[in-house]
Image (tube, rainbow, N blue to C red; front, side, top):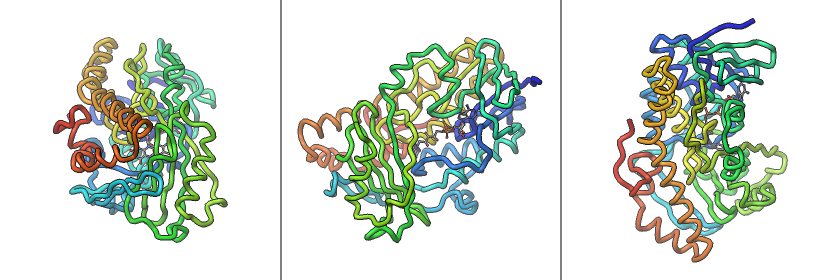
Amino acid sequence: MSDAFDAVVVGCGPAGSASARILAQAGAKVVMLDQHAFPRPKLCGGLITWKSIKALSRIFDEDVNSLKKKGVINNSSQKYSIYYRGNLLHTDEVSYPFHFVDRKSLDLELVRKAQASGAVLRTGDKVVKISTAEGWVRTASGKTIQGRYIFGADGANSIIRRSMPLDHKAWLKNLASTIEISIPAQRFPSAPDHPTLYIGYVDAGYCWVFPHAEKIIVGICGLKRSNNNFRSLFIEFLRSLGLAGWKDIAFKGHPLPYGNFLKEPCFQKALLCGDAAGFVEPLLGEGIFYAMTTGRYAAQSVLEGGTDYKAVERFYINRLKKNIYPELVYSSRLRWLLLLNLRYFSRLSFKLFFRTHTHHLAELVHGMRSYRCFLKKEWE
Ligand SMILES: Cc1cc2nc3c(=O)[nH]c(=O)nc-3n(C[C@H](O)[C@H](O)[C@H](O)COP(=O)(O)OP(=O)(O)OC[C@H]3O[C@@H](n4cnc5c(N)ncnc54)[C@H](O)[C@@H]3O)c2cc1C
């Protein structure tokens, strides 16, 4: 059995749904494939920024009110704090709030939007083989699906990326480990009401406590190569929070691209977007926005280039160069600058940075400013 589409989108996270929706809206014949049936769980802190809300509005016609009504946004906070271990370094109120989404509901909603635009959804069947040259994927149940283009939106462990001739060692070098748990608020000595980041527990990474409506998400991320025994670092962090009853909660982990974004995310008939190409901001690990935006850019490039594969690649890379790479390159530089300061000077250098860049910091994270020289930023 084999059937044919203009585009086969592998993976139905934010990157896959964004690309499928843009393509289907333009009349392309699109199929979306995922190994899981939706709604499916996704390990994630669920923090979304101003630029993510803009992207949700632009691609999916959703805004804060509609997402709140649907229960996708479950909490918001204008305040945030940053600690060095137990010591408060910085706290501030920002003009635009951070929102918290449940990924199960967000991803389901975005998949539905792509379907409503005409994309065909097939779930519960894993892609196990791919030909980038001939443009087909084969699933675990033995189905072969043909596409003029194959979109690799299948996350950090992407099978589409692994089938491309890339430097896989370089990919692993900047891959982070994460662990996350979700805890009822009453188990905290005093339940946090705003997002809090902690540095100093892990090298080249950080820990977080994010307040959702009915639970608190606590997590850790750090470069694999810089940290041994990641689990015990996380336990040390949980103990420092004075939490009760975390031992009965199973730890879950997932790799996070953390500075290993690809400069050449296209090969033959395949294009990578989102985590599959490492498009995650390397300072804070923000990925939902980059997934939706690179999914959109890849789809727009296919619509412009038609069957001219080289032109499609050029259009996609030009968009990435203009809008995405500068953010990823400069936030990575800022990360190393802050980390080296912490290593060789003290946490006071962080304190000084936060004090002198208070407003810049929030605007950088929200995407109102670029990480490149902190200049005002307009997203295309
Ligand atoms: C612990 C943790 C916390 C995070 N917190 C935040 C946060 O607070 N804010 C933020 O912006 N980002 C956060 N991120 C990053 C964010 O989750 C990702 O960047 C984002 O989900 C990437 O979207 P995507 O569509 O590229 O991939 P994914 O969301 O990973 O979706 C990939 C999809 O592909 C499917 N798939 C994979 N392989 C196959 C296959 N072989 N066949 C068929 N289907 C397949 C999967 O089932 C999945 O549905 C966090 C990440 C982690 C790990």
